[in-house]
Image (cartoon, rainbow, N blue to C red; front, side):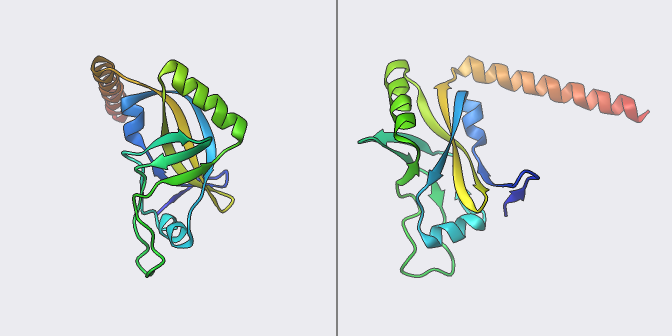
Length: 158
């Protein structure tokens, strides 16, 4: 199920792999166009953003590779779980993002999905890919921080 936050947001899914594979330069909030059974499935937390990415086609932005499992009590109204879904953003934001994608070679990656006042929102990140040595460096830094925290906890216990 989804986790509740105290500021009215209910997080449904996070894309942890995006933070491992990319540098997130900027993030945006976008609505998403869904059908009824998809919303019910999302409310149950059956969303996977792991291999998702966004594309801009004909002035509209779409999320590809986002998996929403079919609603178990739905019938013929269930949609394809991997279909391309349209994101809802202002035209000027989409045009600005399109320019940055083409000029700087960046990508758009969905970072998280959450409910804000009953409406599903997608946090989209403008990202730059990491090299393998960057990934190893960030893993080593996280391991060192984890070791330091573990050592500090063990010293405080005595």
